[in-house]
Length: 423
Image (tube, rainbow, N blue to C red; front, side, top):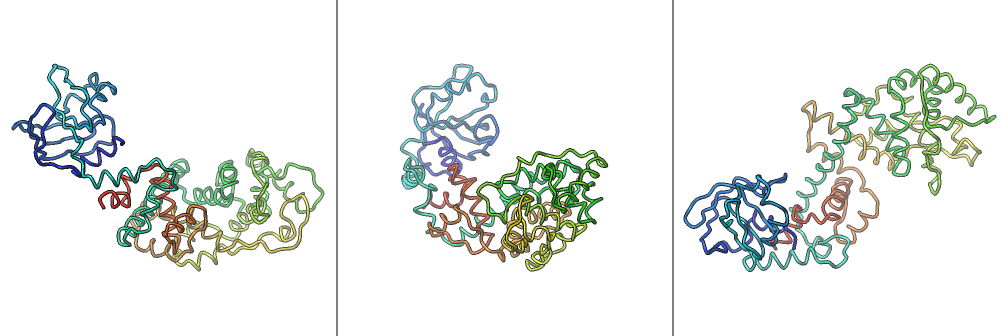
């Protein structure tokens, strides 16, 4: 048993409240159980408890054993001077206040609802499981599940918003600059995401603004900053980029990152960083003021059209600068656009619309429900547990559930866990 479970039992009064008495045989009546404190100090604040016929106002501290009071050195901490009741599962030693009077203690052992205790032990069994509730989650009613997934979806957006807000602060709220940094990061996918982000933040966005109307200058800037133009080669296109970057580097006092930041090993050629950089360059060459365009779009098909760009002809028969390859058209696929929407565009749009007071959560939900579900190991496992995903709405919510609740066993904070506990 964990202390958090006792917090949960006390907060929702999942124990027999009739004939409550302290370990010193004083009657206890709960008028108000207090407000849970998530910061340092007692576990519940501003409680109202009648003890031995006397009404007390103060705080509640909860432990598995009474002796934990001393184990946690609460007797030396003035923050606990206003504790009026000590809640424990097992009373193993008498606890005294600073004036040597005993602290009223209520033992919950034998009083907790038996079904709740059984369900708790099942959830938190030491048997190795993918998620604690894998035997029950497939039978949760649709109404609760849908409402919980909706909350999880917006929780995930809020988490992404934190990083976005940090970038906006550094860029003096330049949404165009932050869009470029986030898009670059996601063009790099998981393997090269950090390298692409490092590239995007290696120069001021104003440098890109000044050069994005010329295809050669923009490509030179991105490939040069990525460290891909440092070698001696005879190929015409490479030498043109190299010479142009040399000029830009001197003009804007640029410092490029190292080529070895980027990984090619065990990657599909279509995801090589050179191809993704070529696509990113083509996107910014085609669309000036990209954020201003994206923020006005509301149809999924319009996003696919906007991201339909043609990269330089050189890449039609190359995947790298090193050697030619079989000719192929390297377009940005709809599946890749979906990834950019989920990880970059929608979170940034969410932040922007909240700031200007025009966020329509229903409209956002309807949009993401039109998108295909993501395919990854976590979603596959949920499908095996009879939790199906019909759109990106469900997959994003389930990723939030797995990573922020299931993996850390935060079942007491989860609506699904709550339903199972009180079943």
